Amino acid sequence: MKASTAAVAVEQQQQQHQQQQEEEGWTGWQFRRGDLQQTPSVQSGWTVEREELDRAKACSLIYSAARKLQLPQLTAASACVYLHRFFMRHSLKEYHHYNIAATCLFVACKSEETLRKLESFIPVIVYYASKGKRKAPEGTSEFEKWRTVILHTEVVLLEALCFDMVVEHPYVALIGILETVRAQRQVGQMAWSFVADFLRLPLCLVWPARTLALAAVGLAARVGARETGRSVEDEGRWRARVGGSDEGVDEAMQWLLDFYSREAMARGGVHAAEGGGGSGGGSEAAQTPASSPGSTTSPMLTAHTGHQHASPLSTAPTGHQHQHQHASPSSSLGALK
Image (cartoon, rainbow, N blue to C red; front, top):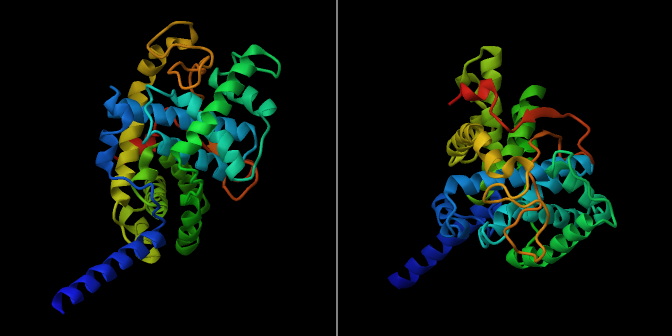
């Protein structure tokens, strides 16, 4: 009887835990932070820092291309999540991050029902990847190489994702949080931008969407407090007002702040490693898509980094936009650390 009672209690606890995870936006793609130190890329020789930078560069390309293609923010966000999930099962040594970035955005256009034809999609990808130095109009060999890579890699991507296209977006939770705390417009705009930056990193694999939304509001509140002269403690009252668990919020904020510093320090070295646009330069040197999909050669030169993040509620990023340069943290952010 005691054993039976104990089993029932354990089952009830498991059900409650599962229900809590569902309410917080957890999915089957959640990992521990320590798992990011044992990814296929790390096992293939990448450092954790290098993989993080490569993922972020790929997501920067996604954002730039999505803006030019007038895609909703949710489409770009889904593409970033797909990319992070993909590299938990495949190595950067096997698939270059720029190839996967293009494919993830193309697949996200389908899953989010914001379709774009390859005839318009590929030239935009190539343009932003090369900072306007290269073109790939339909009918050229460059276009055909990209077309082959994207269509072949699409199959590999879908298999890696187990055809699971469902994404819990932090933007949805963020809307509710901003309404609850009645945040000022400036804080809301900064929070939108921070969510986009969180998605450039694999934080979406470690914490549920609501945690990232809370962290975005937290960072925006800190910046707002510094700019207005108010104390962080006063701005921090939003946590008590929105309720829920604070677990992981502070860690997520610090992760992003630390990454800003690492990214700024690595900028020169990263561009040098990619050969600065020359042929044959650096370990990742390649200026066209791989002739055989899955090769480590990159069709890109370097990721375009300056872009704006619009509200995902709009059909195109033309509404309330906040200019945010990802290449380096702002002076305000640097002082928060």
